[in-house]
Length: 218
Image (tube, rainbow, N blue to C red; front, side, top):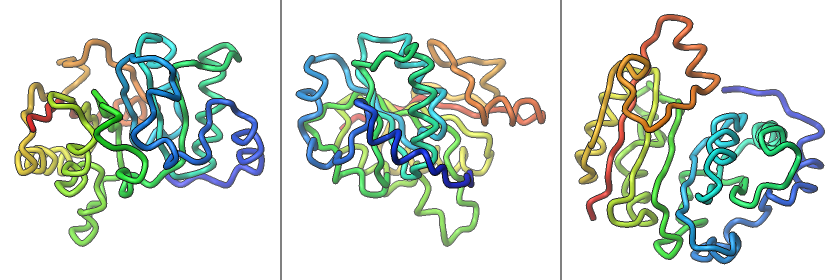
């Protein structure tokens, strides 16, 4: 999604206590920042943050880190998180700016991530760009280095081609696919499905939402 620069975003992010400016400094030590041993889940490409704001505010016994590389998106996420937490600083959620391609600069196996959420990521349809997909095999190999054994990936997309390719990528990376559906809204495979902005837009246009849960077995 293209988004215009938000002049206010940098200032607001700098003032937010739950925005981490230097995430690489916490690599391997995120639990110390949260100051508890609760499970850690992350969202890759959090966009405007509605999904993670709802999820984290309803599950305060789980720690969350939301990642995006676009400052304007993170600014919008910050505002949506504040709304969900009624302007109180969340204790179980941090926002960070990072490129998912370099995720190993931010996390390692000591962070013991139990779940990764990937919602409606760029499908990069041109073959020469496929390696930039967040679900590509080379990315999955990176995720395996930060997920606990039996850690899971929760994935949603509107793209038929990306979904089919992702099934192949997961097989190549030795993940087990626990559940999958080509019509999430008629076959909900999640404990609770939080409908994202993109999800509503695609569904309203008659596009069925594809989704899966996959488990790391290494």
